[in-house]
Figure: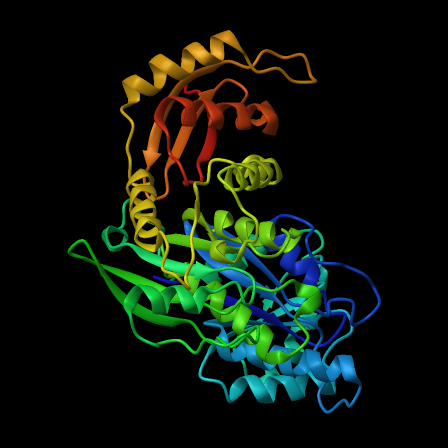
Length: 439
């Protein structure tokens, strides 16, 4: 099931990006006093008490403006409103109600969506009375909060997510393999789907971006139905100029949420770019299985038996922390190794559901920890006493320690590598959580 999509909207300079950063707990959007700084859309995964959702930060909405950036932002905000499941309408409690707030409220009332009205910059109880004027917008009881300092954020998140689905372990729906075919525009995603199912379900042209919406197909593989979702090409934010590209990117993210594995296609005939690895990062952040398909291998000129080895060696050097993802060289045009690619996807899907006995985890990992214990800059001893797998699909491992907050990211990487060394998990992102040892 897709995660709910929540769009943050409002006029310029009401604190939308600050609010967005507060919800996701990190500084990913540009925050500045100058109106209009957030011009591209920002996407992030968020979770509150076990309820995951996707949140979109939009630019400042300026009605009826002919200024090119404001017009583009207005149109993209309208797309975000249409595609979202819930809308957070942010207004400025210090500046008060404006005509632009009223214009945007009129638009939101016409949408068949739940709208939560947030009065931001209410940083103390003395300023609560400022919210009364916003009742006239006709969007229900306002939620007052201060995004900059985090005031009443928890109360708001309770209201936002109370009817969202809790992420329950081992969902039954994960038993079917559902594959999102993703990658940059024009790497051959639609060609691959068409070659597998033997029907022209997707339009295939040399023009990048032909596929605008995800297209679902059922592929019968060794007696089992596999869902294939052909998606639009994921583009860099700096290249999302046209609103149709923004729309396609949003729909692609929603499509990935419906799947439990991604086949990421690279074009073997062109040099690797940073955007190729951003696509990998997008899939890994969704905690789904990942397989890399190096497409158009038939078009590589002058290749010999060592060409694939050199390509894969260079690829893994660039993948770095994602070097656990399996790679296969394929051709959608000649159908070379396409069925093997699905076989590989099924193996990764099985790995994702694997559960490791607690006894095996402790026997092997505690020996690794003893051989290479964690250290930290404070000089305090960190003791990891126990480990158990608390979830599958995706796998989550819980480590119990006396100082869980002091475990470094570098050491977490070491532990992930040791888990992979002992148990495999090829193509599967691993989540590690650290909890305080019970006394």
